[in-house]
Image (cartoon, rainbow, N blue to C red; front, top):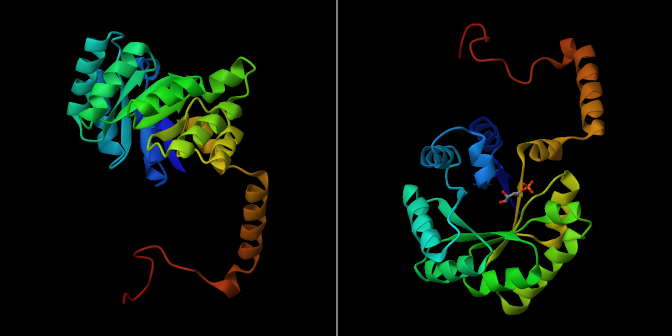
Length: 231
Ligand code: E4P
């Protein structure tokens, strides 16, 4: 499963990228608006931090011509930019044209299997079902994810399923169990994936025991410059 961070915050993106397990970034107009920077500049900086990652930049026009124009514009900013287009009739029409031009499109705001089917037929590179927002309205988002994956497998669609709006670690785990290609999550959810109280407790006792026997055990490696006499 690929991990994307769902943020436009450069500090979070730098920390995530440093972990070595982040494969891309999804932004949206709400996330971009929080950063108080020109969008183009922000997207290019993100691309330069997450080298070789797929970076989604969303259009804000809602008509066919505007979406085409903005999608072509955002992908010209950096080779790693994926144009993000909302799941509307105009969006699908624009997607059909863009995908034929070889432009990678992430279809966003997907809430049903029929929408996901349309996106795949029109050549989407990513399809983004918003799982958390469905759970928010008491609809089981995992049923949607399972249906989309089942349909895509049945027809061998190449569109990658990007599980979005993930709100907690179990969303990530469930999406991974289903076989979603990608999960995009806020930085705080990514941090939560690392945590387990037994890991903390176990490490604490290992280090205490090591400390007690340190004189016998010696050092595993010495900090640079600490070795006397040189070698
Ligand atoms: C995905 O591309 C969206 O930016 C995102 O996952 C939306 O998440 P939210 O429902 O937490 O806003």
